[in-house]
Length: 159
Image (cartoon, rainbow, N blue to C red; front, side, top):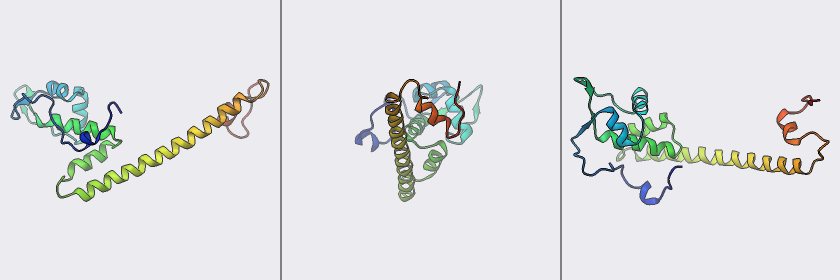
């Protein structure tokens, strides 16, 4: 994660970093992307995925409401916590006041997925540590146990 998560950060509502900006201000797609810290392509991709609305054209440029800066930041923070874009779409569809149970269920499910990944990574780490130790203690004339393990049982040895 690019930054440390603290209790204060987790429990605060998304905020625009520039309080001087008028809430009624609209932005071009380039300015929206810059304010949110993403690329224009990301904004367009989020629109294609249904995470952001596509405003109607107003002359030669579309005008985006300033509130979308906070929505993009919400999406990025949710991704940092491991939520997929589909899961984020589900979160965005829920009402933070009336759907708290559903929101908790999504977050609890994510905790379970993260725990499973951590368990898998622990097993992978233990296996690799064992293979490195085995390799360090195997004579140079014997095949490398790391390569032999990766090749699988019955694999032919290189001459």
